[in-house]
Image 1: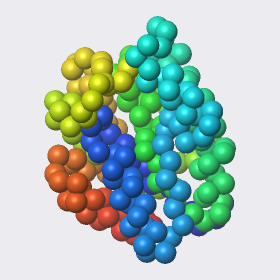
Image 2 (image 1 turned 120 degrees about the horizontal axis):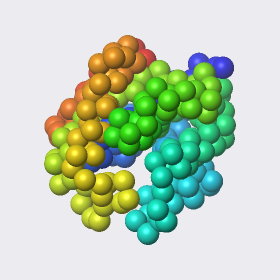
Image 3 (image 1 turned 30 degrees about the horizontal axis):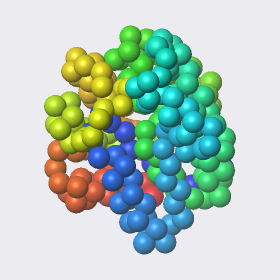
Image 4 (image 1 turned 180 degrees about the vertical axis):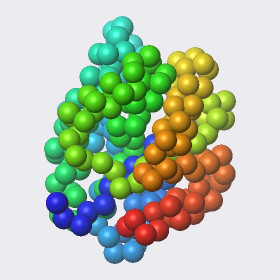
Length: 204
């Protein structure tokens, strides 16, 4: 593998991940890096079809195991088609969500053992691991207010579910401080961007 770097922005819904991915991409490109910005689920033609199914409120009823496997299928395609090739070319990959989201959403909040999710994830992503994951932390009630528009299938789950999501992200960050950094997403967009740049200083 080349000198590529893999940065993930993750966290509860409403934390501004999409905006921060775009800002980080611009910053890194202005610094002379070649950047691939992508999202999980999604990022490939197959992944985008899976994403649409996963987030569609009109989707057929889905067990949490089926949900997990759909996320993993999209992730497998993203790794093989986008992330690995970019890293091998020495590029910087900035990804909105990755395996940690499944550990939290289908694990901590969904009721599957987080360790089992990690084991399945290992099969899917192999030795591919982010250089750093930045969790944009936001309280569920703040995230819900920020989202605007109708909630998708995951966002529309109850307050207790989203409270478990937040707890899961914070628990994983606490247990793996070398790889997961928490940034408060309740600050302004510019301030959050500045905090993200501090985290990646020395990584990229």
